[in-house]
Length: 363
Image 1 (cartoon, rainbow, N blue to C red):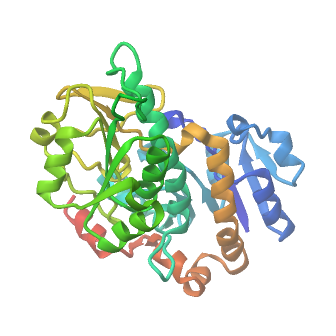
Image 2 (tube, one colour; image 1 turned 45 degrees about the vertical axis):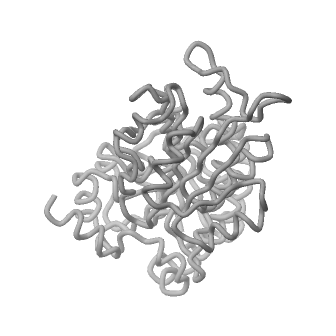
């Protein structure tokens, strides 16, 4: 089986889908791995590091698409990629198909591709191992981001997250108690911030209580509690995800406008459309904007900010999946591995998620 590793440059993306060690595992199993030149360089891995593991280097974008039976990407397929994709190719990426353009969706369907979304690969217990790994990293990054913009000149309020003796800590509200929300709660509370976590799933709130005890307040995520916490939050973080679907705009513009001036809104749901009417994607090079007097941070590929750590974590989780596909082929691998099948958007161009198929039917 031929695997191709794409060099991503869009959106300041510096992660790579497979490390030299991960590639070596596939090579030892008898597969051919191609790397688009420079794909690992931002993470500290040169082309030579990959070549030392038996990887073959190619030097242009079109060639990596042409050689790969299994194409490994970080970023979603976009319209300009469609010309390079060949019929029947298997593509593995963080695709977030719900927010793709109709042109991309119908283009992939026409090419009869097999499209696997790393973010929706789901185990029998409902957990999503690759998304969980990235969410753990994102959650730990949250207080670094918030602390930077709370105190940053000239825009920030000059507030320290943890406060000091005689001065209250910052108030942090996290909507969503999944992996990124829980990790963020741990990180914020560890710095001494006053943290509230909201969710509609009481079991998740119990997990927060189990992990953090009375350090963190938990609230049911109804409209009243969301509205109330927005008004006192110095930092409000959205971490809501609905598998394979657009995130609903839970926060209306009027609700954002009611927040304290120069408070921070971090939208970790932006890669599925965002939780606020005021959300729009930003980049790591230009991550914030001011809307309704509130600083918005809406970077969809947030873990690219720690690209080496994120790439190593991704490879650790992805390599077993790739070995299964390499051994059996895509279709047999999906039959053998239910988690992988649940992570498949398109099989031979047929959409396997009814809600998404309906979404794009008339577009």
